[in-house]
Length: 239
Image (tube, rainbow, N blue to C red; front, side, top):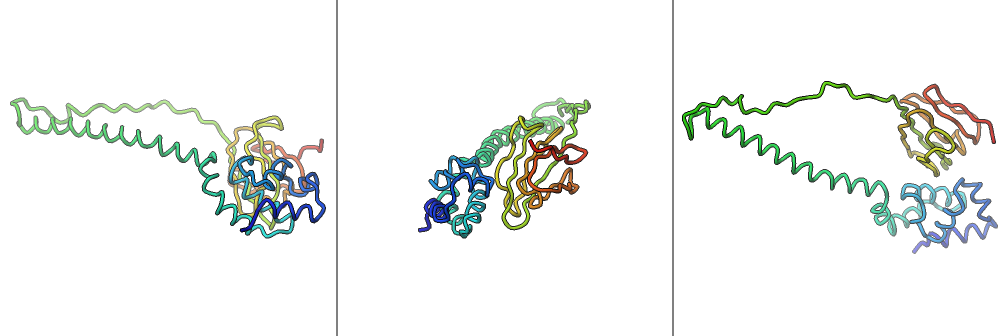
C-alpha cells in the first residue's frame, strides 16, 4: 500500500529540504506540510485544499502526484467530504427542502378541497344555493416594492500551466475576512462575489487566469499583492 505521509517525508529528508524551504517553494504553510506528512488531513481547511496541496507538494518533491491523490481518495475522500463545508451545506439544503415540499403539498391539497366544494355547490350538489367558483378563489397579493440591489463584482480565478500557484483572497483589505487561501491547481476555478474591493496575493500571476464580471483581467509581473476593484487590478507596493 502506498503510504502518503512516509513518501513525502522520506523524499523531503532525502533531498535535504527543511520545512521553511519547502514552504517557500510550495507557498504552503509549514503546519499544513507537517499535517500531510503525518496524514492528519483533518487539520487542513477543506478537502478541496487537500487535493491541491498534495498535488503541489508531491510535484515539488519530484514524486508522482497521481499515486498520492489516488491513495488519498481511496482512504479519506468520502469521510472528509462528509465533514467538509460543502458536504454539510448540501446535507442542510436537502434537510431544509423536505419541510418546504410538505408545506407545498398541504397548500395545494387545501386549495383543491376549497375548489371541489365550490364546484359541488355550483352544480347544485348538497344544497340549493349556487356558489360561483370565483367567489372562493383566495386573493393572491404580490408586492410591487422593488428590492434594493447592490452591484457586486464577480471575480474568477482559474489555474493554468503545469504546477499551479499560491492564491490568497480577502474581502476589502489585508485585514479583511479570508475567503480563500491555498494552491490553485491547473484547471481548477474559484469564484467570489465581492461588493467593493478584493485584496489578492498571487505567488505566480502567470499561472492564474483572472476574469472580472466575465471579462479577462490582465495582471502582469511576478509574485505580488493586488487590490481588485470594478476598475481593474492595482499592484500594491512591496511591504
